[in-house]
Length: 391
Image 1: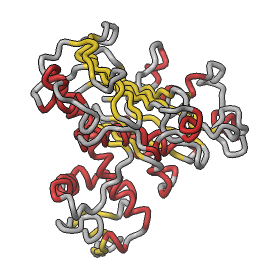
Image 2 (image 1 turned 180 degrees about the horizontal axis):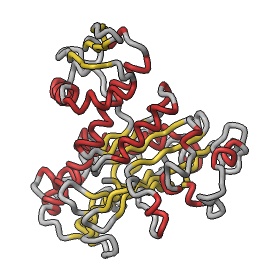
Image 3 (image 1 turned 180 degrees about the vertical axis):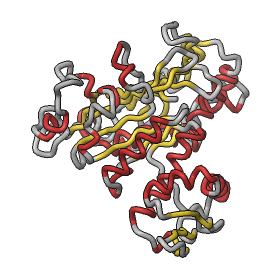
């Protein structure tokens, strides 16, 4: 599960930004017993979060920062700051703008890790991995490497036995050090890489995978699971079954409905409504949150969903006994509801019209907002909370 994510200098973001999934301490949790899960590492982590903001405010860029970091782990190719993803102001004002990322998470083995990476256009500046036993324990450094003035990498800290091999003949061309250590068999690095590859799913919508047979087979396995139909039927309860097409699951699969007289009506998914087609794909990700404990970031999933269906999806995720997380951006202001969410589950993204820099912050940053009296929707529409186009 994701504990926190911090980043800087990515697209419209040029200040240190942090996103946190820890549930608050205190009595407020008793009001929302289904909204969080308790872990063996003593972290209480939120299951869902919503990010609200104006168009072009930076919501997609926030999710894109995680997607970019994941791509460095997935591809294991050249590591460098890509010009299109570096904040435009920093490119103008700095000779070598630096991008920073830091992720704290609970891996599949139940251990808590913190992974930190700093990069510029030349490659890795600093990379480090830390481990924690319990929430209040001190993080111990597993490895830390840093690029010196000569462009060579030096061990700064850590006891990873494989680090000397990874450092030998290393240059800026290919691969993260955590990926190299994983290939060399370091178990902590293996757990970190596995979490990024197998658990974290930022902004990805499943689609026909002509060039990815393995990925298509994984999706088809989900689509044929009876529990998937339970999720998919939220969009239309007249749907009674699915005939999955093994070659074009997101186009040629048959959606079967029954009318009041019991007659079956079959229609190819590609001929169905936009809302049904889109939710068919997102239902795969919801399945992975609930039944595979994935961490899914959905970019405007509910742009084609009505508010009732959106609430139904959130309630389903919160009510299920699972250890996955679902974080989504939205323009639906009805999500600004302190009967459904804790303040820590509501985030805003807003962009300064002067500096064109985005800012990410939580509703919990507003102590004057009270559960009993505050109408969040009205505050937001008046521009008091930011994230509105007329701010």
